Amino acid sequence: MATSMCAVPAPSVISAEFFSKRLARLCLAGGTRSLPKSTQDRQILMKSMQLMFDAARDYGEKEVNQLLGTWLSDVAPALDSDHVMLRRLLVDHGFLVRSSDGGVYRVGPGRGDFEAAVNHVDPVRIMQNARAAEAERKAAHTGGAGRS
Image 1 (cartoon, rainbow, N blue to C red):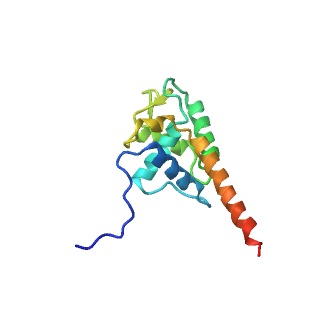
Image 2: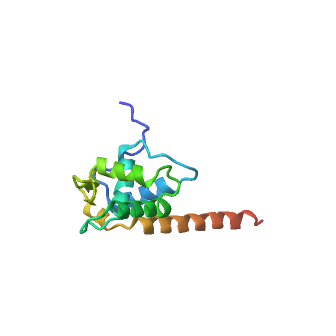
Image 3: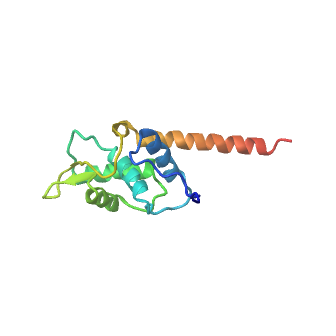
């Protein structure tokens, strides 16, 4: 029987380590990007947005928009989207729950199978660390390029 040359499948339960590495990879890419087609990658991005919210409180629409704007600038600045589209996406996929009158939002169960440790991950810090590591790699590569 022939073996497949496909990439290693992603885990069915997303660990904090996998989540962090995949989020960094998704958000470090250069150029403007649309939302990924992969369901799991979309879930990772949506979960990282959800992590910007405190699950113990309610939010008004303005606060939701501000937090999603922060996520866009600090986590995924290359993502070709806006806070309105992201808010709808989060509600549609259960990561945020909206009251019937549309005035109150709270953290929902979302989709995807994430280990509990993912709820303690800081997406902004992940990206700060990933950008710093990327800058170090570039500096090391550039610094070594001119030597004989």
